[in-house]
Amino acid sequence: MTDKHQHDHKHDDHAPLVVEDDAGNLEAQQITAALQALLVRRGLISAGEINLEVQKIESPGTHLGAKIIARAWADDSYRQRLLVNGKDGASELGIMVGEAQLEVVENTPEIHNLVVCTLCSCYPRSILGQPPSWYISKAYRARAVREPAAILEEFGLILPEGKKIRLHDSNADLRYLVLPERPAGTETLSEEQLASLVTRDSMIGVA
Image 1 (cartoon, helix red, strand yellow):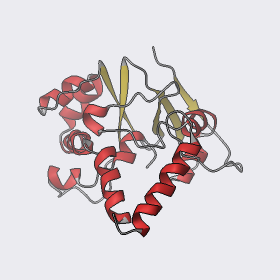
Image 2: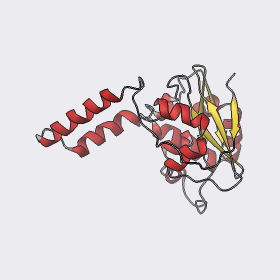
Image 3: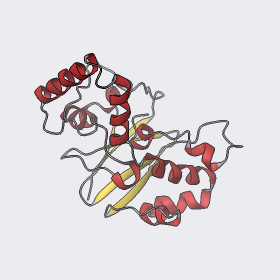
Image 4: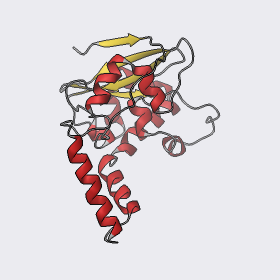
């Protein structure tokens, strides 16, 4: 069974998050970057087109996770069922979760949830698409355990004093989805409008 840890950390100096590929091969990334720069210089492709293709690869299923979150925000009885069984909750919306189990963890004023896979790259692809490159990097996988507050700061998220971070370690049998706190002032929004506010990073816990 996956361990869940609570961490309270001081915001000490730390090394910046280094994004690597899943083999930790920075040399391969440098070669890729050089090739991209060459193609852009020769006018064969634009930087914007490259970024668009990367987004297509990394986030093809995010809207499904956002749909689940929006329903949980709008319907409290659904939220409670979702927290009991994430896979069944998703199926209520016609969303089939391919992973063995899905546990939905809810952010509260006291607790912020953060998801990592310390062993490899386990990720709820069926509802969030492909994992971002930083999620599978050795740097994120190690530092999320060692200094989660510092990781969150690098993503621009500074938690209130006293708020605890709860870390969830995904594995081959169990994946996690973070249910963010509903933004204030959204009481009159439709589910579709609520879904547009949900980001991939918030469902991982880095936003």
